[in-house]
Amino acid sequence: MNSEITITLQLFKELISTYIDDMSEITGDYLLGGDQNNINQKTLGLSSLEIVELIIDIESKYKITITEDEIHQIKTINDMMRLINEEVQVQKSLDIKREETKKLLFG
Image (tube, rainbow, N blue to C red; front, side, top):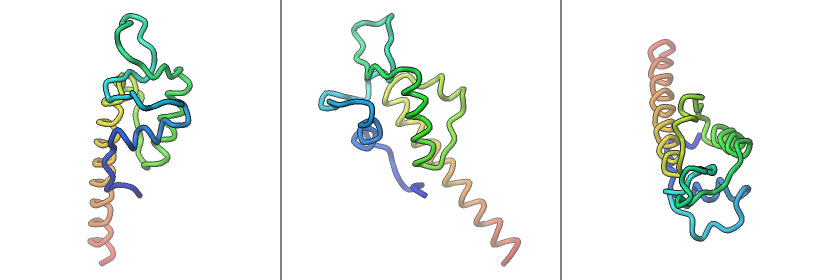
């Protein structure tokens, strides 16, 4: 498991390289999908389906679960990186607790 990892912009760019060709200008402030209410905001322009696929890839790669409520809170790359890092830490804590429980039960 990759529970020690911290998601940086560079690692996130690697995750989205399947969807985006030129990532040279991308920053954490970019929106994942399009926001037609704010034409000044830079966006990756991912479709809803691409965002779902990206989330599935992330869940699989980092062995985490992202809830539907959390998905609705994700707007920017920074939001996604923060959520991944938080979920990885939660998973790490759960893994530690499981190991402690095993030691108590089985010596």
